[in-house]
Image 1: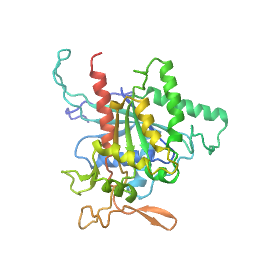
Image 2: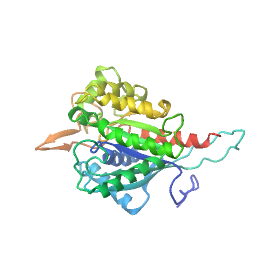
Image 3: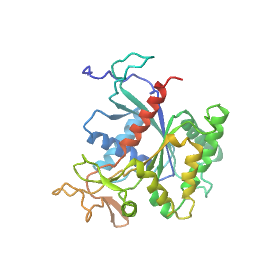
Image 4: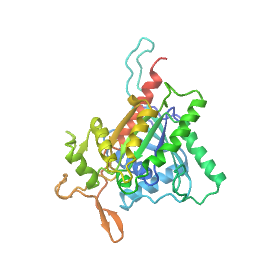
Length: 333
């Protein structure tokens, strides 16, 4: 039932689309599950809704596995192509000479994700059990999602980069093909891609990442955070990204940063330091403890999530993208 405070969302696809992009295993599915949890922990009216039954079921299963089962979503076993819509309270427009002031409209941003086991574009050894025709179709569908999107969430997993060093392998081929496609459509601006890009440096909760940020003196808690979790401000996130690139297994991670700066407009790229599971909070102290903060612990030959999920900075990239896209739409051409 609509209370009158905000009109019900209109049916159909939202005006803005965000594509998820990153190497296999970089945490796209986990970030989406954590996003749902993070939205539930907020005091405002933000929510994520499946755009079709399959997408709703996917999000329900992954979120429950993360929050209640304390396990990470299973790796993709086949092609996954899902869409969700992020809804939130709109901002009241200020009066402009070309527009009268009016009631705020609900905020809507579409989120699309295509995921498949292994790399669709990686130049390394093939691990996909698909024939050439199927591979070409999967690549085409991923490119179509990127072409029609106006925003991109790009996930950079520093732990995977420490161990494998393949982030550039998964970025460079689709970036080249996307640029070619956008050029053919006449949609490059100044020779660069027009997308807004939120670069998420994941696994902030891992000691290797957290301690790197501490050594760089980049940590500070949010003033209104009741748990006192350390954070890296968005203004400092790129500096941490650059430092983590220096620790790449093969030394190619710096080309990821360079490619993002050369193929996209620099003022449309913003960096965020995130964690899908957050830090452990002791039930008695209810506060971050430098001596006992790891929420991911080894168990037998696997890893287990130790306590409740407190996602760090997973909502902010989506809201930044949505607001930038909305501002672009409202700017007179």
